[in-house]
Image (cartoon, rainbow, N blue to C red):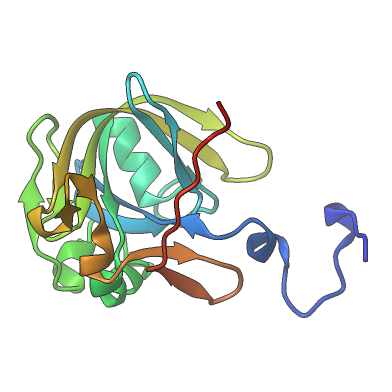
Length: 200
């Protein structure tokens, strides 16, 4: 099969998300004039080592946020955000925080998620996340299409849950494994690892 995205695929569900998978989930927490916010984004990844940098993309809008979502609106105000790493032990809370609440309603409160303060930015983080990356926003890029934005940030502080360190390596399998977004309503928990060395 071949299709051009603008012409449609003719399938019951869009296959694009299932083709580009698995994708890590950036559980983005922010603070703005209206309060604290928390939402999962599956268009997320690390993009550089030195200094460490990450990005996530927001791809739709809310009627109460003028062409974007709470996360992007609040990062525009504050210049900072925190990426909480989503793991299997918190998957129900991750999912609950995806609800489309009115601007100003806290997903921390509505989903019963314990918050902690960040150390290098004025922002909440998920207290029991396997890891959390405190970030200073470097740019917000408009993307092709309506209400599509990429947010880039440099990491200014890193929290790692002690029980997710094994022999000096970050390993959240004790926290239910990394959870990743596949296509449709499908997710995966990463438990099986293997090593490969690059050719010399």
